Length: 296
Length: 269
Image 1 (tube, rainbow over the protein chains, first blue to last red):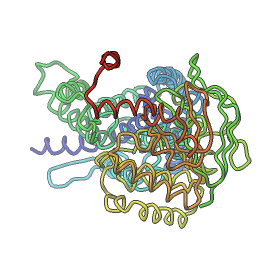
Image 2: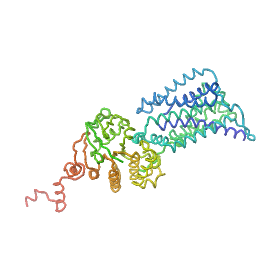
Image 3: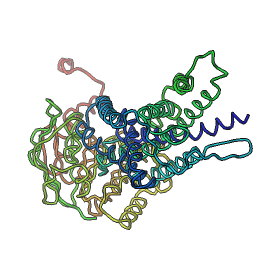
Image 4: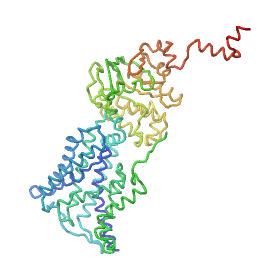
């Protein structure tokens, strides 16, 4: 039972990190209808900036620069690549993001090489013990930070002018333009926000018990794809629920792997995708994907 | 609110190889109501899109000049057009169905240059004009009836405090009573000083509202003039008001009165 609770808590914590990544993914999709395959490279870029700078300027400033850096990279992709193809087929844009991803990941991989970079976080490997249950401080920090950011994001999405512009543009770009909403700005904002969220996620993907930032970190980010898709690509709620489902599934599958050896090894990696396929079989639009709501 | 004049000169528009407008020229005087009549595919919506600078969403482009308030506006972005006081109510209402009525109105105010006070004044005015929008503020716009959605679409455009309102077929798909209601509202908005350019297939309604009318056919202006004169002209009556020739009408009433007998037989008797 103790193991189960520990696995569940870890799963929820990882899930909230995946939710951060998936949220950025969904925001870009909603604002521009582009599936962003460059998301993992945004994450890697943010993590890399934090890891390189923390020794010189301290952890917190480095984190802030990392977040700003990833937001800037996101905005630059929008400004230099996406904007040129606006109005083109969305699948063309999605393929363009694959190109951007290859470019960025190749360069970052070259820089990181075979190193494992520490990010210099203040939590280290300290543990919190509540009765028989042990959980790492980093996992608690991840859950709290992700929860805080997601809440702030959802409030802004719902109540600020930025959020209204974003939702209007997502629903009908032409009509939003007739209202005087600047679509270029909306799309730029979406990419920047997605970059910033990815940088925070990068931090929590590289702290204890993970050794640090390495080339493979961007692979971890890929788990946010099933999270976004099973939740429904155009739903922020879906991204959150999807993230949690993926996190918990992965944690439980990895934890109980020894009892499931007949299935072979590496079940933890595979489980999120199995869940995604199972959910899509029942609900092709994902859990919270758009269903038409209209009176005709 | 203060109206302003729109001057369109030699406006041509095309979607790729397809020409949709051929050197159209028209004027909307300050504080006036002008209507553009025409059937499906005459280029009415294209005209409004060219003025609002949203042709690109449909793969189209335009040449020619559009002046508003004495300044050329045909080379600016859609957001600048709104900021200068031209607001369009799109065809088919196009409310943001998944957003609440309140958020739809907030979206409408995003393009205005007014401060917070001006925006809440605009909201009050819209609620006065359409009290139902205040009652349903927290309902999703997609669940409103057709007439209520049209009110929302007009209210949303008014949130930007336009000097010129472009209306694309506001009566489309509405019950006759609701169409009359919308027409009354347009009259009221105009009485507050807003110029109106109204595109309609419902010519009877449009000609009652407007002072000047243009008839658009296959992308060209074929008739224009005083709305009353056009309403009285035989050609317009026949084509757009569903009234047949005087002679034909007389024949029909005669035929109904008497037992129909072929003329040749009458002669024999």
